[in-house]
Length: 146
Image 1 (cartoon, rainbow, N blue to C red):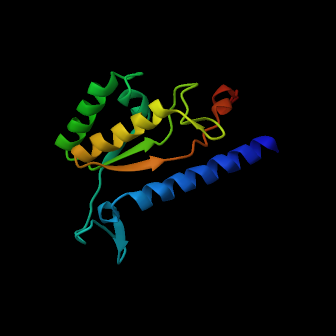
Image 2: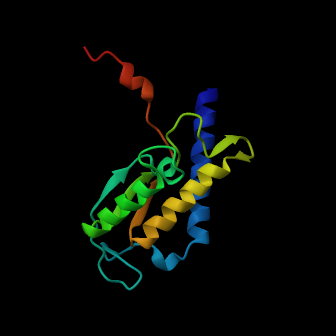
Image 3: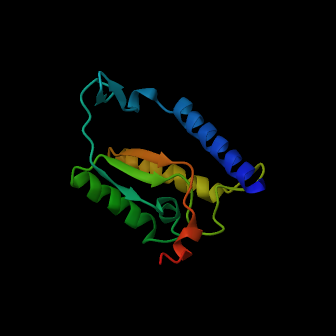
């Protein structure tokens, strides 16, 4: 029961974070659906192609994956190859490197990493689809599938 409540609280916090990001960003930069078609802020059809990136927050703060320089190179390569969207985790993956460490206590380094990812993507004209909740059950990986 406690795990379920904790999961529910994380989900609510993720939704609040998404709303805050939307409210504090320029709405003109968001992709919308108009008449069943994705369109940009000029109502031009938006065709997307992209990829998944898991540890971009950690890379942005030089914790893994080649660090900040590799993140910049990755986004430059994506733009050069006409990719337009990156789906990313909106939370760090490294154990012990959380956005929130306790109720009301936040990890400034992790948030700086998130800010860096958003800024670098914008420099390359990439759109981000940010998954704010991690519903992956890592215990499933240890299950015997006989």
